Amino acid sequence: MPLAADHDAIIEVRDFTAAFGDRIILEELNFDVRRGEVFVILGRSGSGKSTLMKHMIGLHAPRRGTIRIDGDDIASADEAQRLRILKKFGVMFQSGALFGSMTLLENVRLPLEEFTDLPNEALTLIATMKLALVGLESFAQMMPSELSGGMKKRGAIARAMALDPQILFLDEPSAGLDPITSAELDGLILRICRTLGMTFVVVTHELPSIFTIADRVIMVDERTPGIVAEGLPQDLKEHSEDPRVRRFFHREGGSES
Picture 1 (cartoon, helix red, strand yellow):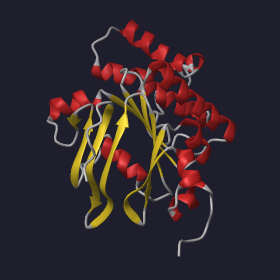
Picture 2: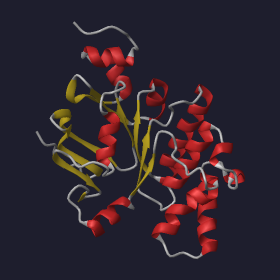
Picture 3: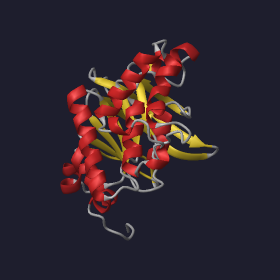
């Protein structure tokens, strides 16, 4: 059943179904992402959470339903509308996906070069400011191969912020990071969200990060193609009666009877 309109929603997902061929991955999802919150999509590996994010950023079209970014349906948009929608968000992919043949500064400059007519000095100034926001301004001339995993991900966040988007999508930001670096990245996410009012959509299954950054979560599960839980992570951990949710938040193995 469709949700009532949330006037504070910057993303609206309605009756969304994702499928590849005859295989239904996610079915009849309905949820909103509110402006200025950290919204987390969680679930076990293979549950479809990254698939959902790829649909939300327009890499795949829904089998059914709609995904609206700030009121615009990304799947049905024409080329001009789609470009306008794409400028409203930035994306950090799991590996960071920095271009290995470009310096960190050049990576962050790239969206500005592609989508603005700013002079060269302005491009460099803005890219340097974005690197400063993530604590990497002194590493601007380094190549990605010279950076640690955490630095690559912070650099990717800086690049995702280059065009001043309203929304940042982060795919498994803590994957492959040690606990200290992961905690530092969580702190960066919260600082950007709270100081700049930016909305975050984060895909993760890392419990420490979920409890640190999430304002709200939805949980998907590969055995049930819909949303199996929605709410505050601490409430779900303490009060959910769904065995799948309890097992996830309490890190319990085995299978449900």
